[in-house]
Length: 251
Image 1 (tube, helix red, strand yellow):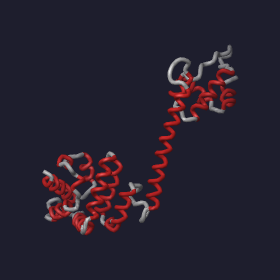
Image 2 (cartoon, helix red, strand yellow):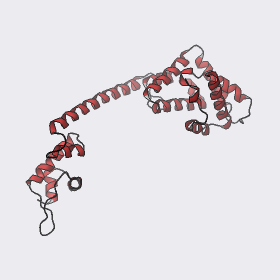
Image 3 (cartoon, one colour):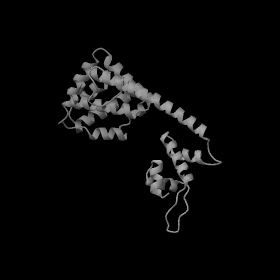
Image 4 (cartoon, one colour):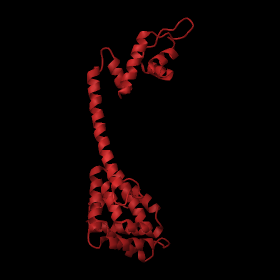
């Protein structure tokens, strides 16, 4: 058989056959006098086995182990590991679908910031009116970002702390006041006397659990610098002053 005939017989592409040659999975056949490869039944059997194994989900490195005569794992061991891995994937898929369904069924629907945890979606739904403030909208984006970027244990702590803070009496009103003060600084200069007032108001809204260590409030942090760049100068100064106030409180 020529390479095209072999590929059609087994149901793969000629490109795949050449790739398997390159990886050493499929032995190279002898060439005839005219230079063409001549494939035999043994090549078709091996190629069909490669196809079956890859369709089961094995990687090519695992296929090489299975095909090896005296090295690597035997087929039963490899397939057992594959079955266990697929079971883990099924469980993860069920968990993802459950989270998705919770988001879709949540009151208020999926927030504008995109898919977040059910807990954060509930929190956003309860403070939806605050998103009319440009600074509040930025805050929601940052919280959604942090939930994605943080390690799991820190993420849960953050969402829990924000939820507890906004759930206390008068918390939403205080947040609304702080956002209004920050919004008013959009066209102000960093030396505006309202900067200190906004910083004090904002510091009073931030739950202690978000910044348990003073060292975490480093004003030179790369993320904070990027955040400042996205703000008006007076707003950025208010946030810097807020972090200074929080650091002083936690010493």
